[in-house]
Image (tube, rainbow, N blue to C red; front, side):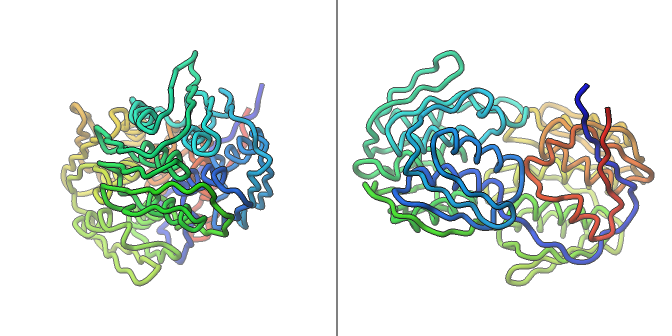
Length: 421
């Protein structure tokens, strides 16, 4: 029988000290496929050492690219030998962002055969808007037995999204960067990693304007040179660490982050009675008294991030009063609440709103992660709880958080990993 692991946490220790945020997962998984658009080698710095990055390295190599990867240092990609256009089922299932290979390959060579992506099971995650965007640029798109087959010369055009889609915006940006003519994306997503992708493309000589607004203009360029680029800090790791500091009534300085990206979370923490201060690239979070219940609703950026809803709901389980958390992005993003109920949380879900009645204390229990951010929520709950929490299937957490146990241990958490049969 294969060996598996579990995370063990003895809760009740206040986190104190300093911690540095890793490079952004959501940026990295967009920038790495974008290297295929270059006509020269590229060097990417500040990448997080996480499973999603390892999967993308394997995918690039399977396509023929030469990749030198030193975790926690840099990645050098020479895309010139990459002549493949196929990403198979096993590779595509390793991460949600494998679908960015469609846009990158269409932009590179006008042909892509990419299996449907994997990633977290958090509800319906259709890619119809992505495919609509490719079709607007001239691609013929077919679903052939779970494989997206897209082919055609990319020609600039207007792309109108029916709904705001982060993945769709990124995919069309990739496909349009070398298209003939100008592409205008309407109803574009505004997330920080979209701005970072635009900056990366522009550093290669692309002409992308308007990223961070709901209209992005891309003037296609036939040649993109190599570049060296450092991705921005991870917004969601920053938020998770802020929540963990508050949850343990600690005092933590989070360094190497971008405070402006955290304004929606900061506002809610302040509303709860948490002290939050910031300067250029650091945020200090400390708690001296009881937390107050708050209501929140997930929204596209700059609203409250859906990726922080789950860790935040863990913090709210011991807040004084009743909190209401409404999830507007993914309909199955409350599965972690069943696990936290095993730890003594008092929660119920009505439609797409979780009603969380604060309890005095959570208690350690065996729990199982169901997806990446649910794993982060259980980490927060375990740090808060009285006794020992056993978190099974921690590989979900490893997909998005770099060396999270080491970072938490350095701030006083009692956390370790065990191998189980």
